[in-house]
Length: 262
Image (cartoon, rainbow, N blue to C red; front, side):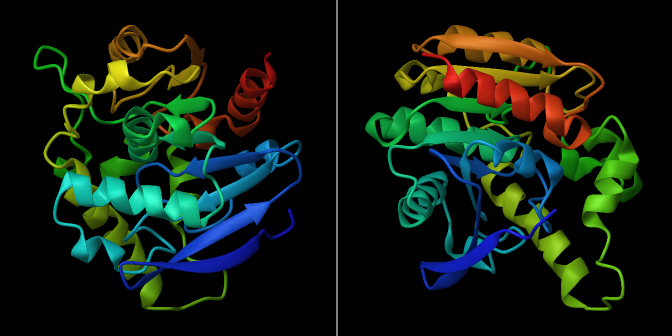
């Protein structure tokens, strides 16, 4: 696995990491809960036929402390829009997972001309009192890996410090990413996104892990019914909430096939 090209942009006075790898039409990806402290196989799958551009969200790994100046949901959406523009993703196809997928959906709703097709993996943003999501911030730390992935060891490996590295910054950065997500989505991941789903006109692929323990599968139907543009839903076998970690090849292929459809 070769390393991606890394560049840095500045938003609201804080640096944000941008990864770039591959050739072909641009595809932006916003990571899920916990962010991406390292490059993952799923992104290599996408980079086979796409130029994959992965901006870090404020406060997430690679996103410095940019979350500390974002005081409202609107602040977050404007910052994400600016990051996407600076990353060269204006008008491009966008994919996202979990918390990142919710922000991708918001951008598509508020600035429809700024996106192409959408691929959303188990987005946050909705809440049904009769079928509530699991609140990840209310869980014991040792329970989180099993909530994020069908195979908890995959999450643990993602979050493990690099071999031979003994930096105090690594664990601080991981905790900071949870704090940043909480500033957007706490409590219960509810941003009342259902009020804006009708504004999404872009063709949309919804992907849900078969064993998602965070977002109930019924929410896929809510998204599909709410989005105005054409939608397709795929359930990923043997995958949890972050299906791209459990099944990187299958999720990557589903997204590429959808993006290549005429």
